[in-house]
Image (cartoon, rainbow, N blue to C red; front, side, top):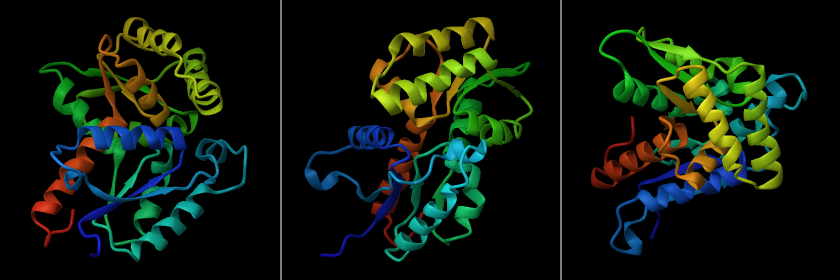
Length: 248
């Protein structure tokens, strides 16, 4: 029997974060039997060049070329949609979408929409802190989405806090497989108290991994990967119920 009503996950950027996404996806899928889980293909392309290093000019290896090839290759299987699990890779989103007629979910856009829905104030601006890689910050992947809403104000960390975020992502999670709970809470505390943020976007999947590990409920956050998982489940279940319709 040929697999139908499936999606393709473009992962491996990094692998631990992709594993976290899959765990959240499977855990939240409503199931009563094995057959209730979602159908998907996982592309764990771990050798895609580092997105931030390319954006910051530390390497000439363009990661978008590898992701484009993945999209071209897996579009032949005709998934209902693609899921791109790397925040920083959304800098190349428009170019990637041009490679296929199959929709790619836009993780930063989903997260910002949730911020506006759940945290927007009735008067005055909502101060939205952003924690992400230096590449995501520099390319304004989230800032551009946040600026679409007049009632949302973007709050970026200073150089000291950004270095702490970078250390947590690269030194702790990527290099040492260590969910540094103490540093994570220290960063969230600074963004909440020093910067008076009403909500903080976790705009990196390594931060999402730490969020999952710590189960933080003390500080108000919108976890982009979590929102992507929820939207993936919604679309996949809808396509299963209405197989003649593709995700749009």
